[in-house]
Length: 298
Image (tube, rainbow, N blue to C red; front, side, top):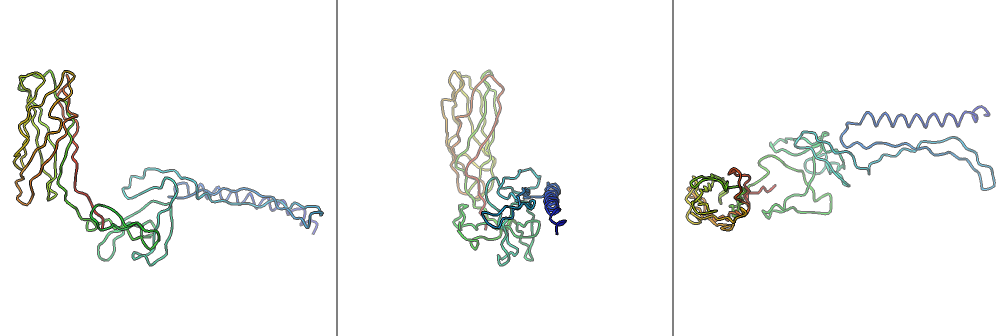
């Protein structure tokens, strides 16, 4: 008995350090594991005391392991389009069965892959083939979701082309960013273009041709389209002040009747406020079109 008491503290210390080294090895082995959180080992003293008056006996120490699941992990680029990471609190919700009848699990691992069912539908699943869950769309056609407060309000996330419908929305506005060279001779031109969407969702090209006028700080604008006839808003005279800032028109509106009879006529407001006239080469810098078709997830 005396010999056992002599070595009990030492044995407890060796066991504690063995646990600590095991945790370190586990941390190193999982340094590249998705969503892995490190384990930290601390040590607590083992004290044996019968009552307040009796002398206390120290019996060595014991390991206290803590898995730091509440700490933010490093978010790295994987080069995979289906992977995701969580910055802050929260978990991905997955279910072992496509219909949600299986076990619901929480994970921080964001490595997802496509899972094809017997009907050819493609869903997002983790590496253990658990289906990633999300809120379904609300059916209103504006990209909203039915947000619930329970696990039962979630469903598998489907990503195949059949999971989406395209609501065609005709373009109603566009912005052109360009420069017209103030040193150009009369007759010089810049040909710019924008792509707009008609009511059927088809993409159409609209050309904006700026030609330097003999009048000071004036350019002639002609708008045309190979996909239809521009019936209003062209030609126009574009003027600039001495600082190269456009004076008028800043937002001309054009009307187009498309060649496709199924597409209704379009009226598009073109923002020219970012078109300048500086002493630099004439160049179209950017074009932005608004009211593109949007995707509604089923």
